[in-house]
Image (cartoon, rainbow over the protein chains, first blue to last red):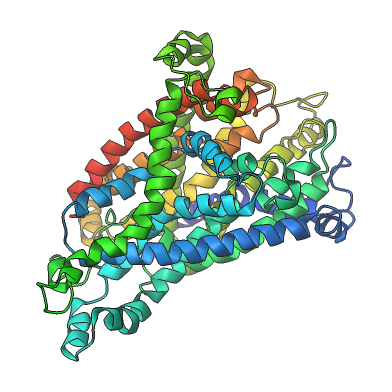
Length: 275
Length: 323
């Protein structure tokens, strides 16, 4: 075998191994979700008895119709509120130079690194004092705060990318700052706003520790991330149901994720990868 | 917007944001207050929901704060006793710290090594296969931590998991093994889960950097007789130092605070004391034992460690760009 042929054979093997490793969990989740006999032992790679039974159970008796609605509501409010707050704040840090601007940016950067485990204790007490335990409102408020720093950090890049000359042209035409914001800046940062919103959506949709802590007793208010727990029994786990529910949770995230993944990398390493 | 992976280019003139502070009427106090008016709502939310809780978790850590204190709202100061208890608790030294630090080291090393290897592989592929591999790793990345963890638990399930069934079918073991009771196999599964979920970010980021390395440099090195191993270490790595630094630091921060990936495993929620890490220990002491003060002290320790890493991160970032 020539050197080149051997090299491409090695490469092909590596690609196959990589694809197998990368896709196996998602594949296994789907395969078990569609298998009516998942969890009864002796499972094969493809479903032995292809059916939608697991999905049907999960969406009716499993309560995921309610959990999906709860999660959607929480995510929607989180997305809208944090988009507005993050946009205003990012315009301030990207377009104005004022005292404490750098400290403000550093604070936004640092606060993202704080572990949720440290926030969950005081926020539990705070939410409890406000009488919002077991309500979706308490959760929404917390999620807005959690998605805000990354939102500001990301939108700041998009706002800075709008040429200042466009703003100045608007002023020359007699526009006030508010008019310029509405008619020039807002349409131009729209793609960034969409990307940021998708991330707040994913944050709110996937979040687990706060949902578990703040909604503890009220299973009618559960979000999808903690709704899964009920399929775990003392001795047996309903793996078919768990995988069907996991599929339902994962699909919207995957769709959104593929839409915006490029901007996610950009936001995470903002500035580190120079073009 | 751009379809490349770099951050949006900063517009010319944006280096001096004062130029855009508003229309020319600079004396107007409204104009001077504008950035603060814009920031106010976000700052209020961050102050009430992130900064004040951070102060409070520290205050709790100096108290014997239990259910009674939560209900009554009274303070019960005990100074540094919680910290004293943590540092004299053998659980910290024999279980929690090794689980947290050891795991983070292995996870970061594994994630960065695999991510780099995948990036190098992707850079050598044609456009079609690069897209295929890129989409596949995107699926691994997009998997939520909660569902991803459950899938790994199912794969390694003690009774009917595919790993046990396969190992039995090919005769490597006679009866199912419960992988979750042993501390090392438990964390091996967490490691697999975290690497599987974390390497796509590393691969995509490093690939972007790789594609930016000038081709001429690599060709010149090849002409000079450098093998591919030598080219990787002598050209690519030094060129991507900054990218590697960011990727390593971010992975370290993420891998230090893994929570759901441990908590949702069988025995991970505190019933298997051998499997505790800092975050889970803090959570189960607080919400399992109602020892919120003690749990807060553990959480403060975790936060201090992460802030230390963050300081390094911020300094790396500041070297690269003006905020």
